Length: 500
Image (tube, rainbow, N blue to C red):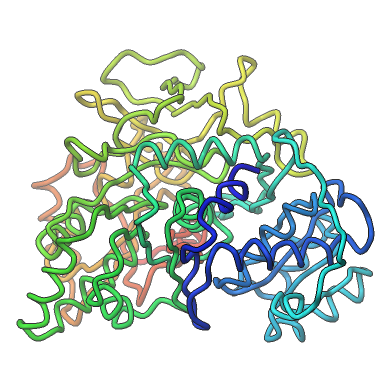
């Protein structure tokens, strides 16, 4: 495992900063070694047993993850905000052999594990107090072995366990370290959940691969994020659009002198990235005014890590996800599976050493995910414009088929956000006997009131008639998952009996 081998070259450097302080790479290696021995319990190799763990982002999280890998197990991170039914689904689906949990989660997990006969182990920090055997050897982990099972967001159906092998994980990390110029002097603030590739691969693993420092906050708090920015240690930041939106709102409430100080500190950053959901152009433009940075947008999925990215050096085009990363093969195809002419939209299909090989215990879903020529079918629709890919939406939820037209929900959302009083929105298609699907929109507004007739009249000046929403619903907030993605299936259900 090159990620762990690399750590031996940086033992004196700070690897993790969390609520308990600073932790060096040597501590991480020692702690993960102890955890691996406790998991093995005298065995020579876990032989890809699934080890689930529910640990908050921290030094203990990383030590647990590495300990599972070093013992030959498959790491299965559990979202720390999951309710009991979601945890039950994960435990049953993975057939986890052991579960490691922070003390605060023991009470929730104890009955679930007892019923299934699963060993529930105490928080990782308890392991660290134990002395390892004087002579112990860990198994040799080959690159083709399974490393993780990470579950999809479930925005379009029941979550599937994506199996990532060590070789694919290494490819994902290498690709980004090269493309985004990671160095050991880098220091990133990680505020994202560690059961998705954005937080665990793009941020945590890339930092540790490079000998850099990854700092965790217990939970997102805009004020605490800015306090950390102002100290001047951090030079990288990656987040989802919702986070940038909240940071902008908090910035607007600062006194002018502090705004100037914050903007000056942000200007010293090396890189800022946005991903996991479409970034509104208005958010990108306002953040550039605040920070001086054009956010680097990229494209990826749980099944492959990242595949397309705007350049680290060069033009970053608003609304575009960029160009294929080194080693990636990308094509756009139509509904018949034929490559579309340049300028026409099509489904993104991908090949590369970073792509997953299977959904856990779902051979039929795995087979459906690939073409006969082994192209992974992402389900996302894009178009190439002047050499850059632009996402139009996800085929199942963002591409609305109405009256013979294929309509991009993302395009309509971008227009709606420009209307005074609308702070956020989401557009979906709902079944309609006449049109196939009818365009509808959920709106989040400020304290003002929205006259829907005036809104429709305004939209007629911006969009052709078939793209204009037929119904609106004003919401306090859009339904979202833990990564901030709008769950459009839930939004569609809100329009079961649409009202004007």
